[in-house]
Image (tube, rainbow, N blue to C red; front, side):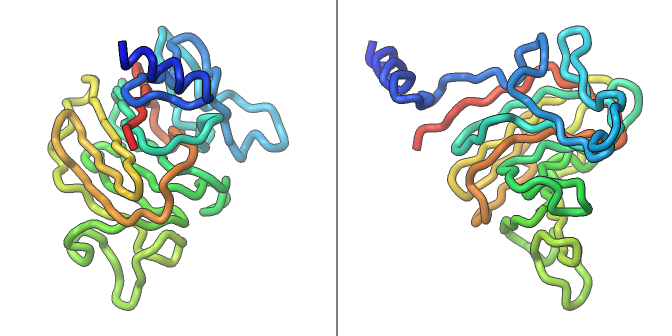
Length: 225
């Protein structure tokens, strides 16, 4: 009864109640999403993102991103995905804001990598986040700083490379964004945990980055403050 009352109050005030699951992908169309594909700026092109057989599909090319229309903070994001044909590259971007800040392509954000055998790596894109053992887990050249611009050491390695399922099977990635922390699990394994993120809210984005990827679930659960 109490939960129902709180949910009604949240809806009345235009807020979302904790534990209220939001289907970011409805299984039918791309309502609630907007594509940012640089190659489409001046001409009509084949879409990079489609809905096929009840799945959201990133075709991999033309390169770009599919972003939520809304911004989110303090949530658990659950994504079920697979590479149907061959292993490749993709990613989920959280706290996305200013578009095309890196290489005239990537929005300002923190990327959670989905590349085969690298799922759970962080890539900092004009944002930053800290993890333990930074010097060990953040490949860098001498004198290079930890940051998010193209001159910086932007990649943060995951804790395990063997958490993914075999090619063609479904993987479950959860991303918990709570305040300035980002916690990532792949198929139940903790693969990354960062703190002191320089952003704590923003849009969520999926990538088209060269490989076909199928998503059968993209859902968000708000977390209690």
